[in-house]
Length: 122
Image 1 (spheres, rainbow, N blue to C red):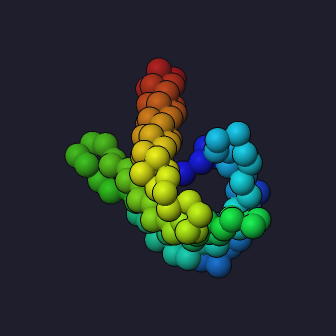
Image 2 (cartoon, rainbow, N blue to C red):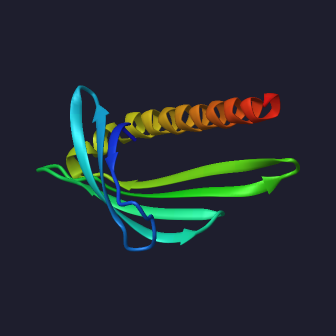
């Protein structure tokens, strides 16, 4: 999954909402048209998207949150369909996607912990 650079989103995220994501990968910028398929607050969000341009990538992402004792467990699952021209590099795409998911989850954890620490010290 390419690195997320920006998102244009409506004020309300609900099933049927449309977003535009711009991602960067291998020196290129990719624009994805994304549709929110399911929202089950606060537990789950599922979206699907397709890149614009001559080489189209289709992807589905599911984000989950579940209780884990005094904390929460956040999960993210990605499924992508690559065009035939990209199949020879699918392993590299999978490795890059896994790294990006790990970075995203680590960033989320750091933000949540920082906000929790700030609230605790207030």
